Image (tube, rainbow, N blue to C red; front, side, top):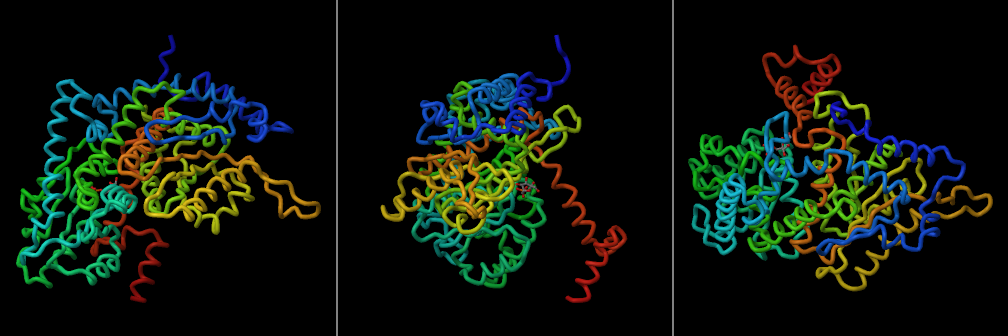
Length: 535
Ligand code: F6P
């Protein structure tokens, strides 16, 4: 029996995949996706699947049956299945912080986990959701009023990272369902121009601020909150605005929010086992519930829950997050791709790439294994992207004719109630044409090499029936689990983020008036004094 700690490098599948990739890289006539279609009449059906109202076509990938079989073997030979079960049952799989990873419990039905701990968690979640329901309803119907008795028309969510990106993306994506007369604004950057220019446009009497922070200590959030508090004092003459109905706290650290001065009944808690980048499903999602209504928020949770169940129960070869995860590993680890591009053909999903950047890069941008060893293989890719068709007139040049491999996820909704038939047909037609052109390529006319399109560029196409709250929830959970699949196979901890700590510490050191200068490297010191001279 082999008792060596798991590493993907020691699995038979990994080693076979190295050989298969080497055949592609060294062959005089390597496989092409076009040829794979020509050789296999069943390819379209074989490399596609649907779950709920999501359909994934992954036939335009540089994989043949042998490669696909080995990728599935890799999943099978990795700890993925046991790791997945450990996550759902609440084991402390975030080992460096000794924490459970239970964002899925935020969207579970009470019948999903009947264990003792599961029942306790379900009760906690139910209580937290009830608070989101009550407060969002009160705000939406005008029952919650500001200090001068007027109904709320503007919500400012102050938060950063997971306390900003998820709610901001969801409110933008689900604009179709937004409340007619309540606007939601998101302030994240410590750049004062963001908050000050937003505040200038608002009426303090009808504005409510939610301070969203898991830890309630984040520098940017606390400084922005301070500026907002000052604005309420200046505008309304309030002595202690934090203690008024203009402030709500969303946090897993209620003690800190109470100490800060937010009234206890205006603090919406969530549990420590919710990671920041997985927190839009928790009370951090209050702004979503205010914007689209609690019933729609619940639908979003339900879509995510259905994806959780699919991830837990579908066999590997029919499991959407597993499939997306394995394809990413094929390109990152065996064909040397450095990035993945996310291109939604839906302007309302414009924030999906930046949301997924945190989800993927903060989760899997790691180089230490779960056993505390340095890893000697690629882990998380650089994730980037923006909406089509905009990207077509910008970076698609590189995708068609550049020298780098950049696999793409194209994402679209089949029906769009906010568009019309003509626009939507052109939009979806463009997406399909791009995916096809990237794969098919085109020979150059004689003497015009600059018109050569090599083709063979891989992509996935992900279609939702429509961009409903439920499908949106399923889409986000799909990517959460894809990231999980990759982290499990790479044997890394996808749930901590120690990488961001050093920068935070350095910023604090540098801003220390007494000792800052002594701690600076020569370049930083010179830049600092240049800024001082010029300011
Ligand atoms: O610095 C990284 C990070 O901890 C993220 O993981 C998190 O989403 C963000 O900061 C904000 O943290 P908080 O919600 O505690 O303010």
